Image: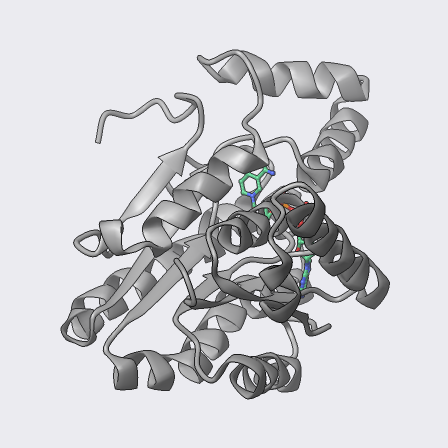
Length: 268
Ligand code: NAD
């Protein structure tokens, strides 16, 4: 990944942060993006510190920028891409990622909840792809990776917004994968099962409240669904993302790859 330019959305925590870190360790130039400015710059500082002090790689200071932005806001996305191109000249790799859709059952959700999810989960990917694809087409090389969820393969009980709207992202990716293969652009989806991050803590709290159980019991209930008997690690997702972003994955496109410790129960 040396000298490849990557934008990682939602990279101040969780899987996004781990992916940004993995890309940096592999020599990429990385733009971090998330809403919370302080958390984002703290992340940039922490990743830089780690690379300089642990990996003894001083070049990282020239290979990382942070652009605060909300993926729901078209102008913020425009700024993220413009600042990346100003700093690094182009974009090779895009990771579409953000917070997850609100939890809840159909009966509890309003039109506003549905529209907000379309904006957060689908339109953020549509808009980012629209902004970066001209660079990828021109250089005849691109990698687009969407962080979705195992919900695109197996619906999750109280996550109807995720079960529904994330499938639109998969349809978008599959269509563009076919149409843009001729430009050397691959588009794939990562479908994580339960991975230990802030999001899983948020969902565990929602589950605990809904079912009148403790937070620990909510986490245990998930682990019970995972044949590996544990939650996934963000580093495991990051290594999959790095592979999909690499030259080695040039023939993989339009795929939705689960990383779930065996949690998804169907065969194909
Ligand atoms: P996380 O909450 O740890 O991290 C989300 C990141 O996105 C943070 O950096 C946050 O600041 C940023 N973010 C949130 N909303 C944003 C917005 N509107 N604009 C810009 N940045 C925004 O979450 P995570 O667990 O790493 O999950 C990432 C994605 O993967 C989510 O969509 C989540 O639903 C999905 N997912 C998570 C799991 C899991 O078990 N953790 C499983 C399946 C799918």
